[in-house]
Length: 426
Image 1 (tube, rainbow, N blue to C red):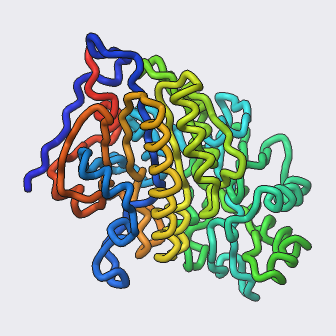
Image 2 (spheres, one colour; image 1 turned 60 degrees about the vertical axis):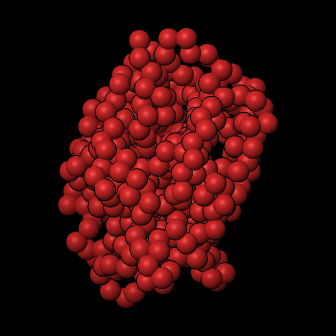
């Protein structure tokens, strides 16, 4: 079937349809990295096809489904560029690097001359070989807790921090280095090279490389890491720098769309996008970006924001499918999708239906994180758009295969927000 490209009709201007009631609410439920490829272990199905998702299947029969290309051609696939696109920002115009967005969330006041770098606490092998011959095993150190990570980063700071290099604690394995008068360098993403020797992917810039080496020497025998190994956990034994960028500047989401927005996410990247765009970050206790995050709390926060909090728009970001893709776990990725279906989507829809508000709901991933490669790819992702005011009847299900077969295709992913807002015009 030939794809029908979507052409935006000016929704991003903040204009409203003539006669539109202000009661309409909008919600995005974003399953990070949820899209995948057919797997022989699943009989040729993707995890999204294989998962038991009764809520999504029922919604699909009343919704528009299709594909959206969230990663612009030539740009690296990542949650930074992709989530900007889903929120209606053209990454080519507004992306200045991943780590600067996270700096906004952490509350780091960047100067115009600062360079921010994501600092992962990763797990390397501890073989009796030169540093460059070690292998990267885990980009997240077993999804280390923020409390443990803070202890380890403090040990690094005591020796490596100075007026030029300042470290800041983020969330779990995700932290920040501010480099005064630094350079925007093309640095390797650790999740792209799992199971590989690190030598070819180390920074060419000598000072960053030396700091990585020294962080490994500091951390590999740290008492906390010795305890983690004794408990069968991955040690967080090296800092890995990547995602360099300059101070971000995003237009206001409310001025751009006419909608007062709330962000519900556990990760600093999404919180930083919210800060930069003037959205409100709603903190949910127990939301930690892992498979065991507080799904119900996120769902309830979205319902409360839209029905009682005075917000027009809520963005519910769930990190777990992406992390399970990076881990290469088919079983856990399927479980994360089923949790999203029953513990987020079902509850958000039920809460909004019970409140009596009219609403439009967009469900989609930001990018694929296929089990096969354990990292992000640039393939278009399936979207589902539900409107509580419309009575549609279709026979399809929500997955990659049927979204492609629908013929609906948004060639530039940042127009997906136009689609959600319903083609509002002046």
